[in-house]
Image (cartoon, rainbow, N blue to C red; front, top):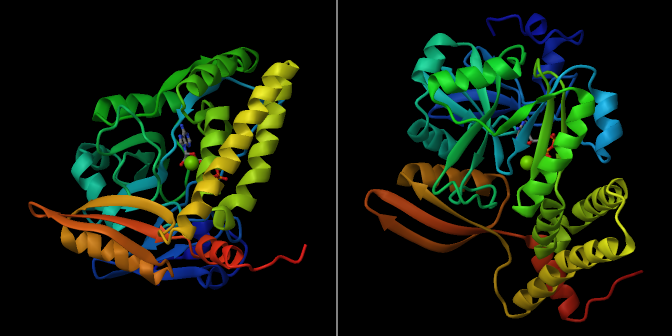
Amino acid sequence: MSRDWGSLFDIDTDPEDLLEHFDTEWFRGQRYRHLNDERHGIERGTAVVSDVVVRGYPSMPRALVLEPAILETFDGPVAIEEKLNGYNVRVTRIDGDLLAFTRSGFVCPYTTRKVEALLEADAFFDDHPEHMLCGELVGPENPYTDHDYSEVEEVGFYVFGIRHRESGTPMGVERRLDQCATYGLDSVDHYGTYTPAAAIDAARERIDDLNARGREGIVLKSTDGETALKYTTSAIHRADLEHAFELPFDYGRDFVFTRVIREAFQAVERDEPPAAVRERAQALGEAILEPAVETIRAVDAGEPVGETHTVRGDPKIIDDLLSYFREQGLKLHIERDETDGDQRVVTFTKVAQSTRDKTRYYLEGGTLDE
Ligand code: ATP
Ligand code: MG
């Protein structure tokens, strides 16, 4: 390699030790590497494409109780933004091509094509050639998530960060919003900037409103963009549980404890009377049990169970995407495969093999040692 990776990543370890953890992938005939797990303090999702380093988007802490967490985390002005529920995408321009990286640093052919079609980003990258746009991709036709936003008909990319791609250093919040406006890029909603004390009430009001509208939550950020804190609505806790317990043996265990804990602390911080706690408990129980019952019935009826998505695009891109999933060991069940003009439209299910196999086993009389 022609560059000094050690100094670039600013680590003490031998750069070879770090590079060894990178996986190799190909995009449009070009080899690149990406880091699937955090190593030596380098974020998961960091990628190296033709001598350019693209840092991963850092993971952020979550508040369980807003008031003390805000006061502990921030000692200066706090920006409050909406937290959208789609998937994290970083976009940058390398050798003249726009590339879209998923959270793990994979250059997703499908997302790259969507972003190319959606974004007018040339002017931005002409002026900021070494930056990346970090945003949430939302919309009904995508291969990863399925949360609906009424304002997004097909696909939307909402910027929540602009960072130097090699150092990961964020642009401050005000400047970022200003740049989005200048270059016509959509941004996540910004609800204002407050002192830490004032941010507590502002955050609570926003959460009430977002909860009533079934939306995910908020991210609070220091104005330099360096420190972030997330907090989510009861509505999304239930939606996550419903999703997880549609596939109980794949996701149930990991989801249930965290969401129950979030709900419990939220009820306490809001000082809810017994009737309100009971209502919360009932809704939580329904979110867990009802989808699990439906899934067991579906397996019993011989239907495929798993996450179903629809994707639309150039036949070659759709092919690449489906091959990638299969290489990852996913079993796909194609529900529908059609042509619409020069586009291929495929509805597929990522078969949840644990849920399918374990459910069948119990339905056929299999027993548990417990
Ligand atoms: P982690 O932060 O630990 O990686 P995770 O991958 O499960 O957790 P989430 O719980 O969804 O992710 O929270 C962080 C993610 O929220 C970000 O990676 C980003 O994709 C998304 N996000 C949505 N809106 C915003 C926003 N306004 N600011 C920052 N991130 C946002
Ligand atoms: Mg998310």
